[in-house]
Image 1 (cartoon, rainbow, N blue to C red):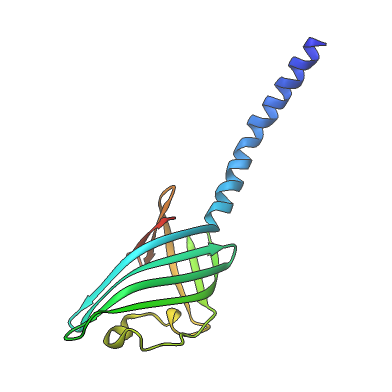
Image 2 (cartoon, rainbow, N blue to C red; image 1 turned 180 degrees about the vertical axis):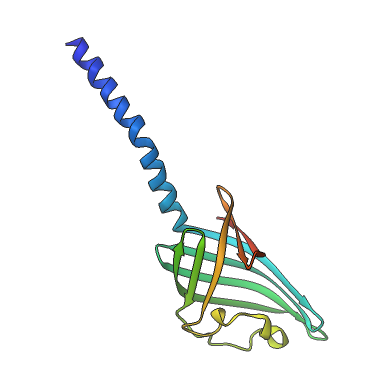
Length: 155
């Protein structure tokens, strides 16, 4: 009876060890398609500056974007700006294509800096493709043509 228990424990341990890489791979695949990350971006040019915190949520093909920031146009008082939108996305290994599902209801919110904002953030159906580099277990670098756009740390 004792030998049967030992054999059963050994077999269970072997199956657990054999299955753990599959479990780990499944977890990593799920984690790469279900995450939220936050980034801070500052845009500066001769017309002013915009400092914003962006939050991206990725959940199995459905995404949400929200931001809040301060717009400082030359000669004007600072304005608090916020923006939220939904998007769809496709993640193919390390490439991500995001397509907006909403048109911005306040398209001129960034005034003279508005031309710096990609159409993806303003017009429904517009897309933006980026390369996603994993920097650590909890952070990502979004790049375009090998140029870093922003660093996003998981929240």
